[in-house]
Image (cartoon, rainbow, N blue to C red; front, top):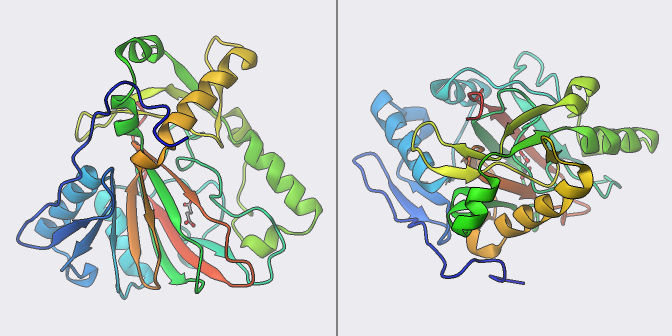
Length: 305
Ligand code: SIN
């Protein structure tokens, strides 16, 4: 399956390392992702933040190991990017409503894990999160990785004919499948085992969702990317479900090829940031018997265009 969907010759985004006076970056994979080395979030200044944001827009996902973050530090770093994004799933931590706990308990019986399908964060919102920040508090001894895919590079690697064909399409992003899964979890009393992320849902608003351009342009870099996923994309405006389904399947299969991916092996106290406007991601559910705890914040994004 690998590389089978690449059109013609692969056009490569260059995930080159970035150097500046604050840190250097070590690419994680050829398509995207990088470790930021030499920067302590506790010491971040306006200038080093600007360099960090530039590194994020270039590498699309960045991570920093061994960061001693308090809730306030994670909140403050998030706010440097913009106001907090809407958290459609939880009420957040007590006293810190914008910090969303993402937890799977050691005794969880559920086959489901938060973020386990290929997705971009909360695209059913009118203004989905631009950037997500995830901080690892407790990590299993094995498993529990996260994988990301560069959907700008995936767009670049479509044929010109396909690009032209999909250019006018609007995708309906809806939380319908997530709401249905949640109701199944609740019926089986499994919802608390995968954390308390399910107590803030406005089900109807999630199901109604929003229509967004399938090909969106990044407001900072001008890059075009495919804005579609497997969890929330329901169909295309003006097309039947029957017509939409194969195109959704094709585009998601195209994006989620290894050549476009990077995969992070977490360690505790790692802070990772990604740009939802041009990546998909997915959490692995492969650490049964162990607890995993993460803290997530998001930045409110613009209306996709
Ligand atoms: C998420 O989808 O935001 C969670 C990813 C993870 O827990 O690895």
